[in-house]
Amino acid sequence: MKNIVTIAGGGSGYTPGIVLTLLKNQANFPIKEIRLYDTDRERNSDMEVIVDYLIKKNQSDITLTVTHDPKTAFTGVNFIFSQIRVGGIQMREIDEKIPLKYGIVGQETCGLGGFSYGMRSMKGFLEMVQHIQEYAPDAWILNYTNPETIISEAVRRKFPEAKIINACDMTISVEELIADSFGYDRTNWISYYYGLNHFGWYQSIYDTAEKRDIMPEIIEKIRTQGFNTEGLDPSWAKAFKLMEHMVDTFPEHLPNNYLEYYLYPNRIVESSNPTYTRANEIMDGRLKKIKETAEKIRSASSIEDIDYSSDSHGQYIVDIAVSILNDQNQRFMLIMPNKGAIPNLRQDAVVEVPCYVNAHGVEPISLRQDIPDFHKGLMEAQVASEKLLVDAFFEGSYQKALQAFTLNQSVPNADVAKKVLDELIEANGEYWVELS
Ligand SMILES: NC(=O)c1ccc[n+]([C@@H]2O[C@H](COP(=O)([O-])OP(=O)(O)OC[C@H]3O[C@@H](n4cnc5c(N)ncnc54)[C@H](O)[C@@H]3O)[C@@H](O)[C@H]2O)c1
Ligand SMILES: O=P(O)(O)OC[C@H]1O[C@H](O[C@H]2[C@H](O)[C@@H](O)[C@@H](O)O[C@@H]2CO)[C@H](O)[C@@H](O)[C@@H]1O
Ligand SMILES: [Mn+2]
Image (cartoon, rainbow, N blue to C red; front, side, top):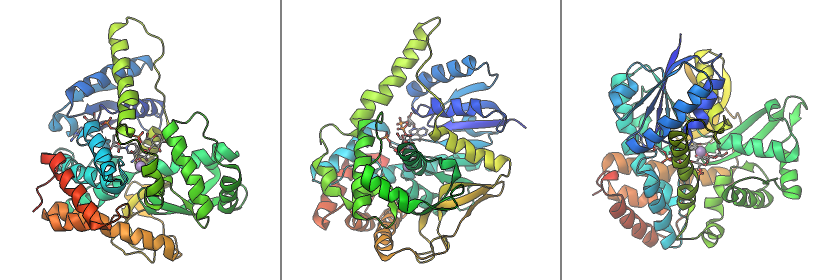
């Protein structure tokens, strides 16, 4: 059977990498149609030009459909890969800049920028899931849309039966960086990782060739040699530099780089430019590249190769689909209700842990051991603040939102929490539910 895949947020700069990965994986994941669904017609139309070019260049007979209509997007599909960004890059810029004005972390998925995005994202994402329930109730939603823990919690409350798998590419990026920096083969690894999304640690990394846990050795190498960040985007190189410091200071378990926003908000704020943030870098980089590539294809009768390739971000989501289709029980780091996976953390937390994926869905793997107090304490505050935010969304409660903002560990006091909340309510307007 050939599948139909809809890429929701089709205009995203991740689409070419995902399409090229799909084209490369036709033996395991045969596809008859790719649909690009996006509320922004101009962005979808630019991506149509690029994807059409990639399909033809690969001499594939896959049909391409481009739409802003949910019924056309979802009717009859088998998989929806979601990468929508509700509010777009313009609202990401606001999420990053308003907190920075008050001297606190301004970031896409962490701190109060992440909460601002979370409130918008829940609204837009749940509307999309409603459409999917109507037009394709049996389809699998493989979700990359952020902030993942908040999205996962909201979908679980509103659509408990939805067939959704929430995934983040950060752990594979970290593992690739480690393997490249120190000469490991990560395909031999069985990783045990626990946390919330963008808020977790490795507990162990078992190397099946060496037949031992190599995490202590990796930690030592990070402390003494540092990562090889040559060729990385400077912002990512900077993040991994701070990760080295985190590992050196807290060497018990290997942290996700995103913990820098909670453990070192001081350093993050000091090194941020409040008038030119990551959103501005993306506007001047990834987004410009899409426009330029589409223009190049439109205006040329024959063109040189365009600068997109299949990548691990695309491969990860395609591998999840393949594991479902072929009932392979492959292992992935996924975002799921805890229910015992981390034994000493509240059972209703949404956590990121290794899981098996097969035709029936996701089976989380238990860590079997309690996590230490330091890591547990940090997680408990974060779980509570994220849950309060989701409560605020469903109840329309200003008080719950204020509690969520105050409890966020990037926030020094309730006065700042309130000022930032009030300014974000104003800036988000209709993107947020009304809070009273
Ligand atoms: N989970 C992960 O590890 C991971 C990795 C990379 C990116 N992401 C997430 O993927 C998303 C896309 O990132 P990006 O930088 O490419 O963003 P982007 O803004 O460049 O692209 C997102 C696209 O979604 C469209 N969109 C917005 N709201 C929509 C809606 N309601 N319905 C349909 N389309 C809609 C926009 O018009 C835009 O074309 C973000 O949520 C980002 O955080 C997640
Ligand atoms: O600032 P951005 O938009 O470039 O990235 C934000 C996303 O960062 C992570 O994904 C990385 C990934 O880890 C890296 O290897 C490479 O593929 O780029 C990705 C994004 O550019 C993170 O996991 C996502 O959740 C963030 O949205
Ligand atoms: Mn992520």
